[in-house]
Length: 263
Image (tube, rainbow, N blue to C red; front, side, top):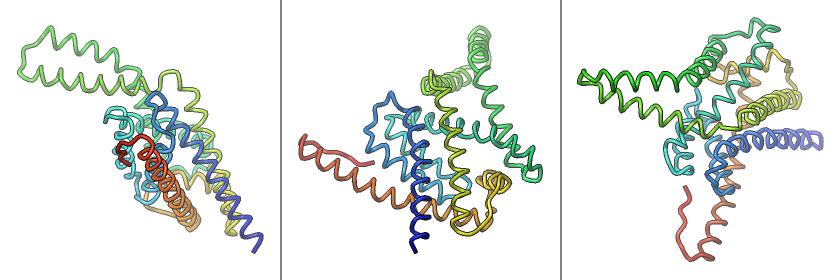
């Protein structure tokens, strides 16, 4: 019994460390928005729980909605989630490359898609400013077709989105990459410890399979148990942080004499 409790405590503590790193990565992206930390932690926990429960990472849609409210606008909210996912995926791809070299059988369409996605995003980010300036100038000079104004409006929308993302990552590239690497390495260690705790084997090949299964429906027994464990712990964290944030709001209401909305 003591061994069981100790093993579970280690797994929960390790899980907490992993998500503390991920939480601060997201907080770093939105640092300039000065979101109240208690509110941010509650938002992170409940959106992460949604991601663990909803397959194919469709919980990111809910995360975009929540962080748009926190950031005070859809541009910053959606942009922050995109930036967070990009750096997470970038670190993931860089970890997968040596793993697939060591374990070629673990290569899947998902890992290839992620690698292509990262390369494409980097290419678009680098080339967008010059492409935007050229297209904008060309359409203004050769304004003849009826759809010219519509194209210009869409270009402005894309440029506004680009500027939002540029502001979110400016001066933070290195920290975001380091935190993303740390999160994945720590999660690999957690998966290994969890496997030992439930009496199953786990090596780099199993970790590679776990990563590539994130966006698919297939799950091994170990992966299913690990996700169930993660969702259970995160559900508790969500409840606890929700109660704490509710208490903070009530105290602020009594102190300031104005209404607070918990979103």
